[in-house]
Image (cartoon, rainbow, N blue to C red; front, side, top):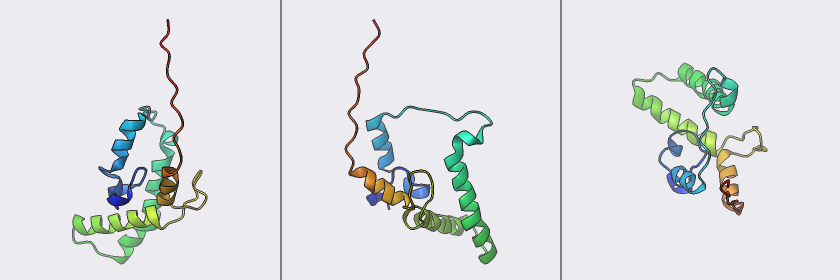
Length: 120
């Protein structure tokens, strides 16, 4: 999965990929979430709920795990499914997968950067 690019993808595919290199090129603003406000971190909160409902509760009923390695293998497989096969209904997704949205974004030209003038 790493060879395909993975900025914005969830899970093991997103670790140590081109996302870090892209972030240093585009210099995004560093923001933190407000204390005790899960609404400001809604995307990941929703992912956690989806992970719980679609994977953990189902896998926990159908398979007995002998160790963390087995659980990690299943979780990594679910992340691949979540990012490349499962259509999403979130804002701007229009039923596409996160990987499809990522690939579509690669073909867009970046907006020109404005030069910030120092205050005199």
